[in-house]
Length: 309
Ligand code: AHR
Image (tube, rainbow, N blue to C red; front, side, top):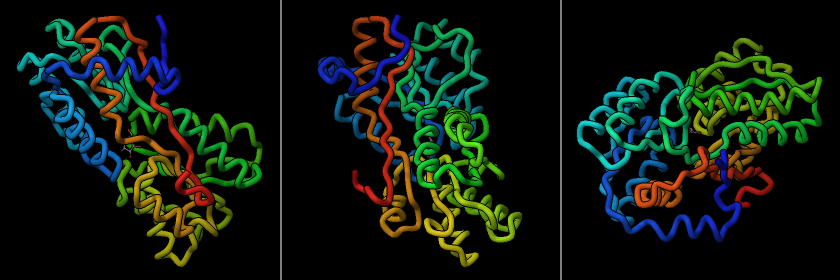
């Protein structure tokens, strides 16, 4: 069985896989993390619009960042006997039991965006998402060249226990560990929000006497970085100049920060991914053909030098 498949790898195959199977009316229960930052509302809006376009009856549940709300929503979908359940899991742990209940009810589960840590992988059909570890690596590689391998980094982590926070950190560290003079000297969670990123950067500025000896800020998402930029400006610092700023998502407000020179690089996490996700679900409901456990959506690096690239 193929473990992983890149979207866009074999364009022909993917297009074939995504086009042919859309027109198939189903009811899908979607348990969404919440609406933190700018990226997730854009993702949710795309999922709702694409569902309408494809004639899918989407039951949407916003968990406001709480796993217990997601577990409740999934159990409600099971009771409603939806055709399929789609989950963007807020954190990776705590899913075994409810996924077993969905399986016992004969309802297939698909994962979008984030991941779960379950021993029995047959509890879900497939995951359709970006490769968060690769995103961390792209950010680390960009910083290594931009700093010529000499850099003390402060890190704004995402939601503790979430797949993007775990994997972006791992990917970033995997790259900078190749450079003896690159290291993370401070790291705290800003929970993927602008306010969270601002508070974390304010504490870093205090703890380092105004970011003395700090060469870069690596934020697990743009919103935290935008908060960090605010905090730095309020402290009289020049983000993007005094300190290199690299993050993930490439939301519109970050495009502006890149163009203004307040930030230097952002790894794009595509938000318009409904067109990839729904055909995978409806296709599987139609033919039950085994799928790779992970269908990967590409991530692209954007820099101040090439903001629109
Ligand atoms: O799961 C993806 C992450 O979730 C995004 O990078 C972040 O903006 C959101 O909170």
